[in-house]
Amino acid sequence: MLVREAMTRDVHTVSPEQSIQEAARLMLQIDAGALPVGENDKLVGMVTDRDIAVRGVAGGKPPTTPVREIMSRELRYCFENEDLNQVSRNMADQQVRRLPVVDRNKRLVGILALADLATSAKSGQASAALLGISQAGGSHNQNG
Image (tube, rainbow, N blue to C red; front, side):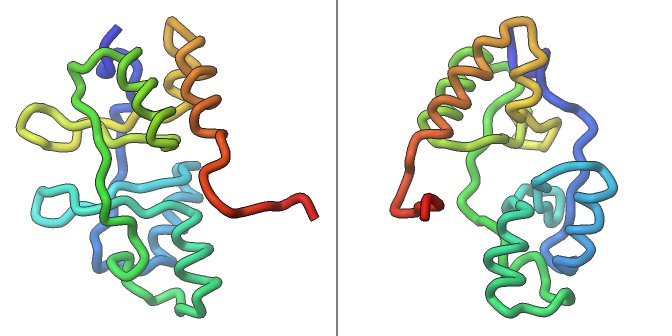
């Protein structure tokens, strides 16, 4: 199975100049935890609800702060014609819950999330990806 067969095609984006409040409102409206950030028809980052909470709110930034100031610039993506098994293994290895999907011209064509893996024909892919993503990745602890 290929990524294009499991991905979500209707992807909303934000610009780096939009406010974090606008990004949060769009996330609420479309029930998403992340948005690709695009500028001049190019993918330049990702902003997540966690970015807004941790880098924005907890960092004391006002709601008018541009997305550019808190977005993740390190882009990980996959191609629409890649094998879904391989991409789900990569998601587990890299501990990411979602990946922008691009075509061979590197234009955004979709997004692949754990939910997409779970609803694809081979739901074991979601389990494998989730297992890798859920591995402890740093020095954080919520047990006490």
